[in-house]
Amino acid sequence: MKIEIMEVAGCEETEIIIRCAKVNDSLLKMVAQMRMYDQKITGMKDGETWLLEARRILYIDTVDRKTFFYTKDSVYETPFKLYELEERLAGEDFFRASKSVIVNFNQIRSLRPDLGGRLLLVMNNGEKLSVSKQYAPALKEKLGIR
Image (cartoon, rainbow, N blue to C red; front, side, top):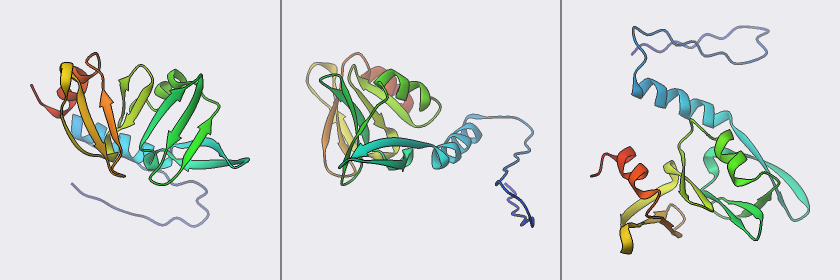
């Protein structure tokens, strides 16, 4: 792979051009990670609206019809519905773990099988989340686990 960085005076926005013989899965993953780097999500905390990078989010959940996202050390409420965030983060490394939870794949420290066909995730902050039986096969497929 050849990487070239060119500074252009007066350039207002960074542009990334990828030239390749064929698009493959690893290239698409790199593009998704670059997009996630720039992906921002708004959330409220202590009466203020915060603009956070999606890659910092550990997981998103819904409780009592309110949606929250969790970073390593904070919780933010967001006006978006879970399905809206799922659509917005499509193509990123987020996946549905249950009817009320979306998880950032890059923030998982470890995982193991749990009762009833579920998976138990340990996030980078030590918090434990469960992947429901319905959504576990998709995660196992992503990991190449049978």
